[in-house]
Length: 375
Image (cartoon, rainbow, N blue to C red):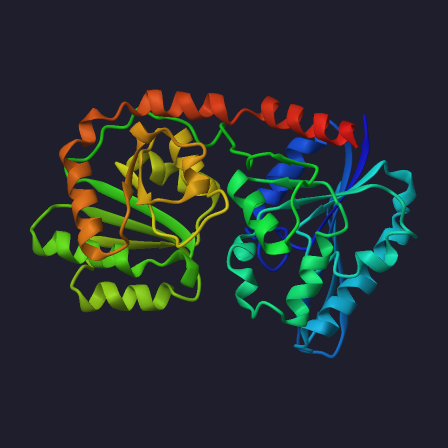
């Protein structure tokens, strides 16, 4: 077995146990076919000028943190690099065959300066939608150019979708990466079909960390129209985030409180129960690099209603989804109403079987092992 040191800037931690849980699940699966150790390195917002924290999460997972009240991105990049270097030598990186970085920025900002010193091969796994939006920065900003420079170092790349690989190629101006697409891990022990008698009133479910990119308001406006047209429904909204209070206010102002429930922060088991109860899972994001929640819903046998997003369509059978091409209230009204009329035609058990066979752990592990062997 290869010895792999995993380093990530985004991971479940003592402050937020759901943060980037998909990386934890990926690490767990990779660890079954390699000798693996993971280190979470992060510079976080704190109340002091500088404070160090260390947590041991398991025998194979550790967290090293610097907390600071400094806001400068340049200082945070430098502190991240300092912490990374200190940890690399502390854990003796030389005993590993490979260093696997999950999320390139800011961990690899200065890789071009230290790659000749740390000669252990490295690879990058990417999940981030920020590449699609050019990190919301002007094209020639110094920070943006420093991120682009990471991808000009010929580092082998794992992405969760072809769409994300294409985003990174356009963003960096580099193509022909040594690359592979490895989808996110779906826990089929949790997300699976259960024969639950569906309610007469159609139930819809959506869960997110609610930020601007998740774009919930056209969807909610669609439910306002459904209500005005006296179409029966119930919408369950899971998750949290900076838009959640605004969403609750919207529901209240439009007199939907008896038809929309906010479920708050949810764990995987709670989310799985909602998939099984729901007639359909909704997604409203402006963009997704993969959408774990959509894949989980399909593995649970729950069809989808949502926007035409290329990464989701990479793995979704068109019979299992109703696509909304224009993101406005009327389009959502039409799509949901059409779904309600034919909701009994979806074979949920077949949907679950189709995607459970697609997202197999063995397939992911074989792809990973073959890719690192190529290096």
